[in-house]
Length: 249
Image 1 (cartoon, one colour):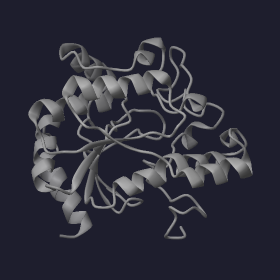
Image 2: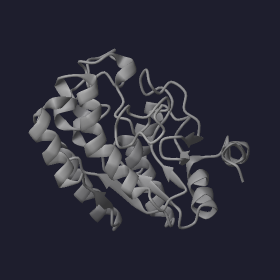
Image 3: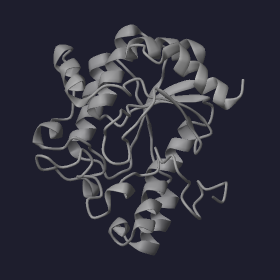
C-alpha cells in the first residue's frame, strides 16, 4: 500500500471515530509496529489513560531532554505507578550533548534560531528517531488550534521527517474537552497547567502565558510564532545541515 493510500484509508475509515476507536484500530492495524510518544502534556495524559484502561498493545515512550521541569519528572513517576505501566525513556546521546555544549554553551538556544534547532535536534529529535527505528506508525497528542503552527491537524498524516504514518487521535478535540475528560476520569496531570502553562517543554524554554495569549506563546517566546516548534512536528522541512536532514531539503 502506498503512503497516500495508507493515510487516505485511515482518514476514510476513522475520520469521525472517537479517539478510543482510533487507538484500538491503530493498535490492530499496526500490531507490533506502532508506539505512543508522550510528552506528558494534558493531551498525552488523556491518551495514556485511554491506552492503559483499554489494555491496548501500544507501547508508550517519552523523551528526557535533561532540561525538564521537576514537576514533569514527578508526573512521569506518578503516571507509571498510577497505571502500572513501563513508560520507556529515551535520552540524548551524552557525547552529542557534551560536544554541543562545549562548542556553543549550555544555553545556546537563546543565541539564534539555528542554535535552538540544534539543541532540539540533539535533545529531542535524534532520541525520537531511535525510538522510531522499528515502527511504521507513531501516535501523539496533537490537536487542531494549538497555536500558529498547528491550526489544522488530521487524525492521520504522513510524517515526512520520520518517513511513517503519524496518528493524532485527539485532532478534533478542543482544550475544554481535554480538561473535561481529565477531571471526569481522574487523570494525573502536570500541576504547572494550573499555573498558566498550557504547553510544557524544557524548563529554560517554557514560561507561563497571560490570559488571551496564544496557546504556545510560552514556548521559545523570544522567537516569532511561526518558528515555535522543536522539529518533532515540523511538516515543512528538515533541519538544514543536521543529522536529521537526509534529504538536503
